[in-house]
Length: 313
Image (cartoon, rainbow, N blue to C red; front, side, top):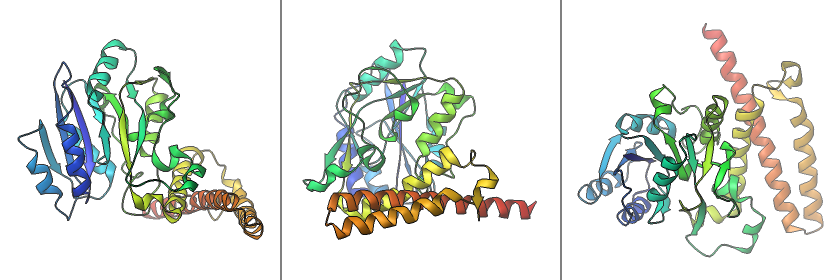
C-alpha cells in the first residue's frame, strides 16, 4: 500500500485536470490511496475534489492555516502503507508513475527517499529567452540525463518525491516555517526536509521511469515572475545553507557583510549590460541581483525573529 499526498490552494481548474490524469494511473500491486489537503481555498476546489470521490481512492482534509507544509503535515495523519508519495497540484503523472515508484521501493530496501524525473508541461509555447533560465530553481525540473541509481538527496524535487512512512512514524515532519505561504516566502521546503533525512543517514534513489510533468503556466513565463522567483530562491538558499554557518562578526544588522559588497556589484553589471544592449547579460545579472537580495531579505527576517524571541523570554 502507498499513499499519494498533495496540498492545493485556489487552483480548481488545474486540479480538475490533474485529478483526471490520476484516473488513468496504472494500479500498483499493493494498492494506493490519494490524500488531497485543501489549504483554505476560496474557489471551487472543494467541489472539484468531491466530484472525484467515486472515481479515485480519494480522501480529503481541510487545513485552514496557510502554508504548504502545514497542509502536508495535516495530511500525514491520513497516510497508509509503507510509502508516502509527495507531489504538487500542478504535476501530471505518467500512467506508470506509481508502478515505477512501487517497484523501486521494493527492490531498493536500503533507500528511504525516492525521486523521479520532473519534465515541463508548457501551457503555451515558451519564449526564446527561457533558455537563459535555470530549470531546477525556477521550475523544479530535473536533468533528463540522470540515470537510474543513487542520487544526492538535494536532487529529489517536491513534485516527484516518495518517502518511506517509517520516517514519519519516527516523528519526522516538514518544517512549516519554510516553503510556499502566500506570495512572499523562502523556497526550499523539500530541500530542508531531505537534508535533515540525509543527516540522519537516509539515502536517495532516482527512479528514471517514474515521470511527472510539471505545468509551467503562461504567467510563469514572464521575466517579472522568474525574477521574483530568484528572490524566493535566494531566501531559501540562505535559510538552508548560510543562516547557521555565518559567524556573528560577519553580519551587519543581521545581514552578511558580503552582500553589501555583492549586491551593488550586480547592480553595476546590470547597468553595464543595459548600455551594451546585451539582453541575456542583463537578465542573468538581474537574476543574480535578486538572488542576493533574497538572501539579504531572509537574513534580516531571521535576525528580527531571533530578536523578538529573545525579548519574549
